[in-house]
Length: 242
Image (cartoon, rainbow, N blue to C red; front, side, top):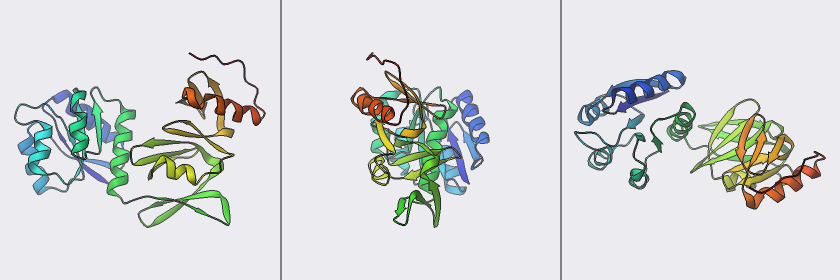
């Protein structure tokens, strides 16, 4: 369970994040305040794992808050101002959300925070079980059948392994994850995505449909993806570049 603190001077913005927190089973609301100084008091006196921090506030900016107080908790910046993204990442924030925040984007951010708080996850293979991966969460290894994997998505220092059953957020680069996969079954379709070739439902000029998910297809990878799918026996119509 991650205890969350919201620091934002906009009541509607706080309400939105509060409603999102209530929808995620492993999140709990520890506090929701408009004043950064009050927020720091809560951090000093309560068990907080994750801070949702606005940037432009009248008492103190979120960037100044991080520089002055050296917050040890996971921090997700929530702002309407993209020009502060570089400052945020220099301060090693977990993620940077642009208002208005969608629930899907919120969920990606908190999954990164959850993976960071609950331990370093890794991906392993076992030689005598070539059809499976093992992902480590804390001290527990979980077995994933390669046949269940739909696609793998890169998120900075993490990857999402999306299967037909659930999604695993793993501390790993996409390159390391790719090295654990058989090259005849999985294919890079974009700098941030690897897909299971057998799970591809459709391809168009800039998109691949996999298990109900619509994923980006880069121009440089398109020909290789089409060839791989054709080799599996799936018949495709003509594709045109955009």
